[in-house]
Image (cartoon, rainbow, N blue to C red):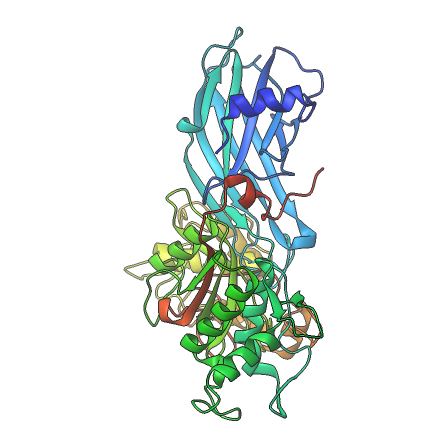
Length: 502
């Protein structure tokens, strides 16, 4: 990663990233560097402020330079990374800084926080959706992210999100005809994902020159991958029976390798992804391995249990401060996974939740039950507090108890009992999501020419159409195209979705 002080000097010398802060009291110069947590890649176009005063927008080196006030001895640096057009969910990251005095000689980094609103609205972009979509929140010690160099405050903000720009194609947009047999729909997810991977790397279909025609090149397509897989082994597979030629991972990787080598000789290697078994979830070591590749600028085609075996391409991730991947971002060539099923299950508390009142239950307000009720009440719009499983049963004004009463209406007792009326009513309300209207309203259906599957967030709690939860298949069911010479940090940065300047 570029040294912040050197990058600052270069940016100022070229007139890029000049101070943008408005006039403030007790000013001290500040340089904020914004990078991805995975790979520490600079991110351009990220809005930066200090205690609400604009510092600037990050340049191509991930730098924003301005002034912060030292009057109170503290400041909170906040950055916002968003790009609705690319369907990057808005991420807000903050870092508290204390110990500021003029002249500036030292500073102390405090709590850091990364937050993405409603990340569980996997079928939406930005922070829209309906009440109850879960948030991503990660807090940690940010002491190592703050320093003072030559009187200038230097702050590094690490974004949880890493998002590569990978072209999207819908597998249902048309049929492909191989040896006079039309191939369409569900059997095209593998070569469609392969096309997205190939176009990301600029791979071309090369048609060799003849005595009468010159060599021609064109962007790689799924048809090219299918034909190459078919031509490799016309007898080992059948066009009308699974697995077809391009639905076998060894044959698919070999076909991709042939096309890649013809397009860019001695430039890329084609192989499998990170170590992983038949069933992997998110988070997992396999998901972390996929994210490590993303930090190198490398997307991975991988198989999932999203429907009944479905192939997508991993284009991004959301990563906690301990480097554990909480969400993967994928280009899903189908894009219609949840069908008529809600992504939420029924409420089924094991013990009473809320005000004790007349309850004689030995156990009341266990944390998992409280959290489940809080999540449902958030979905219904009655609760706006944290879903942390914490409640004060002795306080009639406790936010969770008050929310239960608000849901119950007149004469509510502020308690949810197992199998009781409040639990049944809550389930009746959230189960309204299990109708076709839910899928239509949430825009989960992806038409033949739609791009609903572009840049979709998935984790282990996401439900698919025919599977209880979103799961991955591991190494044998994956395909990676990786440059023989690692991309530089600058080259990776050029492949990221930039922020939207504000």
